[in-house]
Length: 322
Image (cartoon, rainbow, N blue to C red):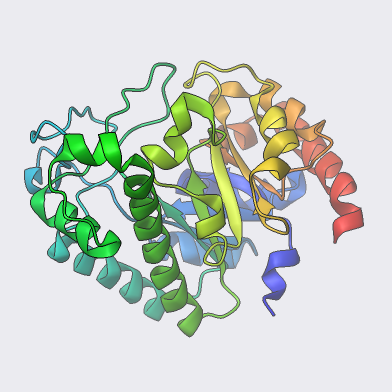
């Protein structure tokens, strides 16, 4: 049994949070999430007795530097993209081998408290009030894999989307879930106690015509066996939402997230303190909490006290579950 799963983790996302590492526990934080297997961050977490949690980048690159990884749209052309796109063409074996190698090297060298998969999706970007949602990935290798998986003989993207949209969506979701399970098994083989989280598109399954699964290929039920904690990115201002969004997400999460799975929100410092206070008041508490750019909270004692109060409130609401 993974005993770490019963510990509520609170703290900033970003290694900059460790600059205030000496005061984090005073204000209710007991963990820091940081990018990659950063030896300096691990050392600091050890020094300040904080849970070291890695954000591991899966399917995202700079397309300007790696144009061969740009997914292909139904028109046979590379999809539109900006600087913040995530998701790559998953037929590129060299990229996948490099991703797995990076994970293996990290878990062999370090013993993180938790690892959260980031960009574990197909292509797009959801941190926007008006997201540009495009169907992908229709290169020949990807469509041939779809045909092999389903027993169909159809290469034309238009016909796939017209006649087999549900099978296409299911195929993509299974593929993402398969990578999640593969990576999780690697981690667990070295560190059985390591928590495994996933940063999620924060939309409910019906929003944007089902884009959570249709575009991003994230299916909570298919991911459930691989993931201990689901972490939707509740960035209200960036997404054109109100500060009640996180609370609303939690209170309806039981309708689409499998029973027994933990939901731990990540909020944005840009929405502080309104979003945090709303989440703390939720009747369905978050299983701990992350704050993107949360280091700024701990640079201001008055803000740090607000964070501590929210942590205490969430812990009280969760006491009956622990």
